[in-house]
Length: 214
Image (cartoon, rainbow, N blue to C red; front, side, top):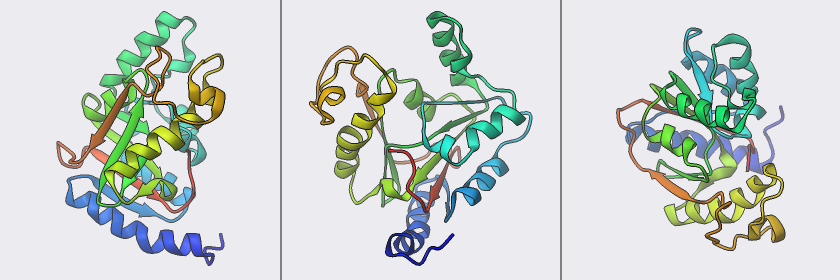
């Protein structure tokens, strides 16, 4: 892959520096220039015996991680549920899996994660439960401040994410712009800032030098 353009050159300079900032806060963090390297790195963290689950994430699909674990690991897959009740039960069981996979809505360049969630299952797993969490984060999500990360989560990530849920009536579904609504079908019920990783090393952040997710 040609990485001579200005965007990729900037990612390759900035990525390792941001990874060091995450490491200083207790995260295990690494910068991978390509999706292929990111997949290889993620696989190295996951024993074949680990029970794996995930939150809603485009990024883990884009690097091929979700298809990989579906083939190589025992999984808790909420999309396999036959009823809404079974789906909820699988989401609850995922909170006690060995490895939880996710993306992030923003990564602050000083080493913090910002995530926004509707049901809360994804941020719940990030905070506590699974033995380890692997977060796949495209460099397009790196922002300068916490405030910019929260703004990105509301105004960039959520209006695009809402497209995965047909029939939702939120302002962002109708206009593409965040209305900071308090509707029952809002996908912005919880906003979580992860400023330190405890226990140390539990959260693995893989920064990827490509544009991933939204």
